[in-house]
Image 1 (cartoon, rainbow, N blue to C red):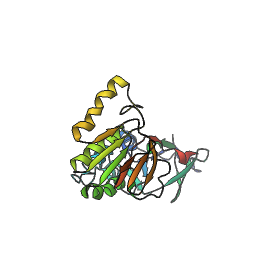
Image 2 (image 1 turned 45 degrees about the vertical axis):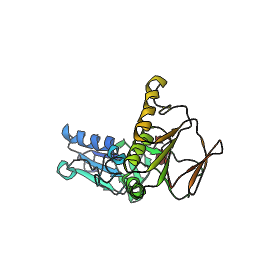
Image 3 (image 1 turned 90 degrees about the vertical axis):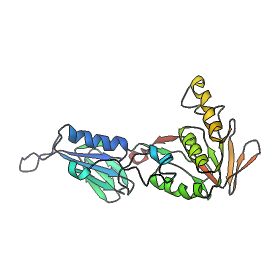
Image 4 (image 1 turned 60 degrees about the vertical axis):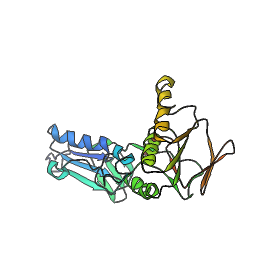
Length: 248
């Protein structure tokens, strides 16, 4: 697809990729590898060089790596980067994106904004409550681990397991509270998920199932049975949803 100017000349097609995570980066790189010669622009909401997320929960969190940037020479590939750019909406009829920096025209739009973590209701504004999704999140959690706080992890999913084992490696006391009867209840069938409770025991983390959070207070997590779990910090890992609100 390409545009035609008033003089009748055909211009190079413009591909804009919204989302600078794995999917967005791989799309941009694949276009060049397969010979696409039009313009490719990669828009990321974070100011950081595009990076891979899995190392955040171990290597970056524990200070074993400063980052996890993709090993891609965007300049050599002719891929334009617009980082720290918030996308506010799309106007398909006009072939334009609305961003905080102004409109961005496109011929082809790739939406690769991924997912965003679900926040625990009632925790807005409470100090010491963390998510782990971005590089900035990992950097905020580094000193928490270094100070060896008592940590409560809400949710025994993938993020909960990864963070709990990293926190134990850092010397923190860790309690994982899960509303379901087993880890990864929403992701895997019981016969597969059941043995994974051993992850927590092997790392020295305490796992409490059938434990629903009633509220979070400074210094403690209160469960629906009235029990209080000491918490110098709380890390929430209760799932994610598509990051598509900007398209509404």
